Image 1 (cartoon, rainbow, N blue to C red):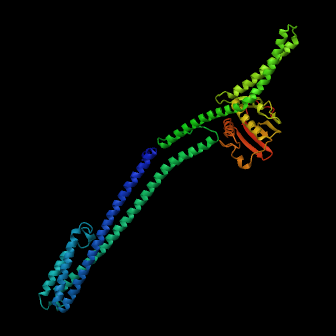
Image 2: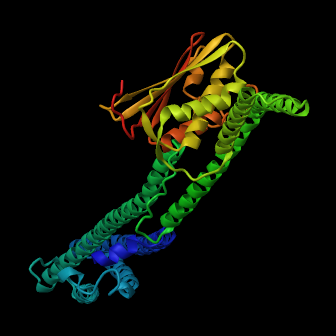
Image 3: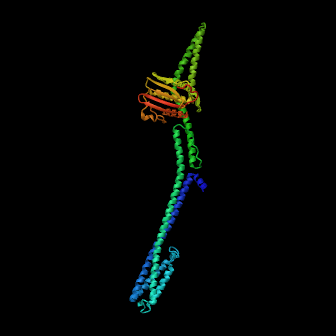
Length: 488
């Protein structure tokens, strides 16, 4: 039995719902048929009770005219008695076809309807005999008179039994109907509760899992849902939801790359300016050497070496700029490796330095010993977003400071990016990490949302504090990695 219920409970939800609907329709149909049958029985019983009441009235009239005749021996009393006997017999003939149906064959041990008819015929015959014997009606000790009176009493008793029987019969039908209705209501309630629990548990369970996972997605966690051990629609919903999670993660990666390219667009003009200076120095050094060679002047070894050193340094400088730009633009798989935090910060500062307006300084205080498991490229994107936002928030003069410390007790490194800008109003502070929320006139509003997702991928957290007119501080908590000895 338990196995049948388990197989049924693990079936398709639509099949369970359909089965429940069919069961409900069949149940209500059966209940309606039973109730209708009992209502017909009550209707027949009430109709018969009315006829039996008429029969009882006829019997009482027979007894009344019997007493009058026995007292006064009037012809009209005799005729009235016979007339009421005939009316009673006609009523019995109307009732007799119902015998074996509503009345029942034994009348619960009482005299049958046939016996009542026979008694009534015997009463009529006996009454006719007495009427043909003059003077016998005034003799109270006449055996036939005594028998007539006893027969009349029996008729009254039998009719009363009929009346009582019909009342009991109606009450029994009503009681049975109430009992069956109560059982049916209880059964339907139990079935409804069972189906509601079964379907609700499956549906609300799946909805609860999806709700929990949706909240995780909002926080940047794209972990697929575990598939339920069922074969119903909830499994299909979870599979579709997992497909959606995969698609969201893919789209987010595309969005990250597009955001990165947008950041490159912002940095391009400044990078071109940064490259222009070393290229000018290289060009100048080459021209000096070329002029010396063309003039056939004696070669100054010291000057030549100095020019070549300048050329090498400027080429290395240009290479580092281009290398940093290419590393930032390259699309790679997310991978955590222990790297020195100060190196990642310095590369980000170098890339963003071309965007820093006059009067704004970037200060860094990153201990050399702090190593963290980072995806350098994506963490560099975090720093670039935070610093570009800080640059936009500052009206020169101002300062952007990046500081870090390690806390071996909690196993975390704390990195803070602080600016002296205008700050963020309290009503906006709780929404700055929401996708597409921006306080700028232009932009997608995805920068800080991307930052939040990258930090979550690193297993860290990010929070913000701000005071209007005083500035904003972003605090990043990241798991420690590598050698942390000598941490401050």
